[in-house]
Length: 114
Length: 115
Image 1: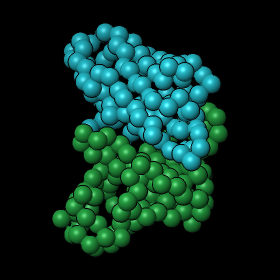
Image 2: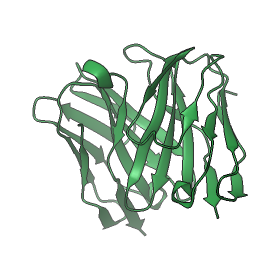
Image 3: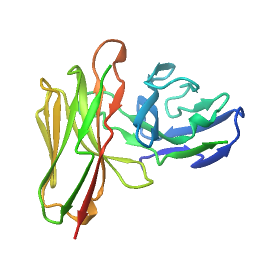
């Protein structure tokens, strides 16, 4: 089944404790990205990647890191989480090219930073 | 910086009505525009994708149009059903310059269709 998976789905952590949220897709997509969704602010893009070893900042990259060493994986790293990073996080992927770049979303990761 | 606005923020209609959701964007240099549906506590499901060179796309009871020059898109839902109740989001993918490939979302329209 074609899908985007995220782990963990729920995470409660404390300020300053490094964490990684994994994202994996099995559709051989070139494009992958991370979003956070907050009430009243909507969905905002954190980072995106057009292909392996190519990453770019979205609208809210501060406090986050990403890497794209393999095509299928795009982990989101919070080196020193803070309470303002409490949010619902989504990973998405798509092909590139006209008519083939429908975005497919993962189920989301609900992160709470105490 | 691209900004996307969706109107109305919320809409409540009786079952069977035809309805229109609006999306506007400030920078017309877009690669495509996509409409999504999000159910409470769930991820996003793609409904329709319109390339910048297209004027409209249709899928079942859904029809999305795009007027790139005026920075507007509409999602038309025919014969609405209670199962259509969800939040509808539009997103544009930038085409130009250093922000190529970046996606910007609107805040969404919360649709309630009551029996």
